Amino acid sequence: MIQKIFLLLLLFLACKGISQDIHIRVNLIGYEASHPKKALILSKTPINDAWFIYQENGKKVKEINPILLKGENWAPFDYYYECNFTDITTHGTYFLSNNTQNLRSEKFLIGNYPPIHESVVGFMQTQRCGFNPFTKEVCHPLDGKSFYGNRPDSSYVDATGGWHDAGDQLKYLITGSNATARMLMAYQWNPSVFEDKVNGLGLPQPNGIADVLDEAKWGLDWIHKLHPTSEELIHQVADDRDHLGFKMPHEDAANYGWGKNKYRPAYFANGKPQGLGKYKSESTGVSNVAGRSAAALALGHQVFKDIPGHLPFAAQCLQDAIEIFEMGKKGKVFNKEIAMVLRIDITSVPGQMTWNGELLLFLRPPEIKNISTMHYIMPI
Image (cartoon, rainbow, N blue to C red; front, top):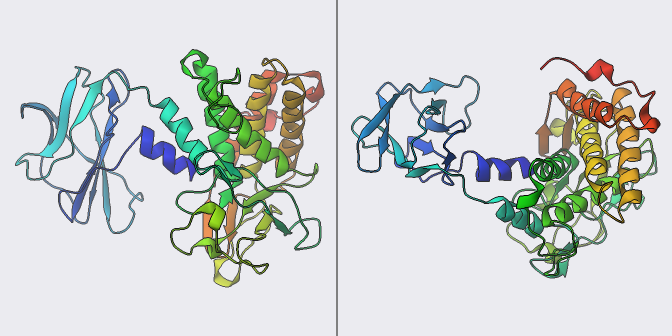
């Protein structure tokens, strides 16, 4: 979910289709003049005509050679083309179109990238599970009942918190940990641009901590809960039984066998296929979810150890990062997440473990002086 949101907001926001057979996607937020610039053309048939970047007044600026992205298509479009216009750096308003201009994108800006980071943080706040600062309601307080873990199925385990996924109300660690890490990294890159307008619950009350860190801590707190012991990690809460159409989270009518708006399943990562019937995952026990989660926790340690009053929390982040990293090394945490119908397939195992291995080597506290990370440090 969270990966999709950042892509929508920061990379390729979909524009309206001009033709039912061809859709053009540009970044409606705009392009920073000195940064890479790409657009996508989605087509049901091959593209053979010439395409150009035009100024707002209709003047041709650059001819574009759309590059076919093999294996990247998504129904109903069989052909995805990438258009690169990074070399255009003059500030102004532009659009992408074919030579006859009967197919054209929405207009977009090239210049200074707008300050949308707080809007992204605000969106994350609206996706919170538990107390939601947007609705002022508490949802899913009974997450969850354990499955595939080291304890009897249907045992209670506290998996409350985190963020809802996309347009539904499932929760995934593979995406939640990624979103957490990206917020922490954004703060590290430029802490001075982030505001402090809300408290840890997302309510209007400055608390001396940037709102992006309040939101990242919401994610870190959830990761801690999903790692109840040194040998356990929950990777998903709820499943496709959630899909009942539009519903407010605190009025969730989904019934997982314990009544409407009651307990929801919490699936532990066990390195084996999970799911029902033909919808079983293809997990073989590799460690993407471990690498991502441990990396987010290691970043949490980096950031929160320097914030007054948060040293114990930072220490817990480091301890959990080490434990989860060790789980990944043992192959106990899988890469393909599924329950019932929904699946998130992530296959770049070395990349996720490398990310966290590099972070742990960078930290180099005494607690990890003997941890073996070099196996995952490789040229990229």
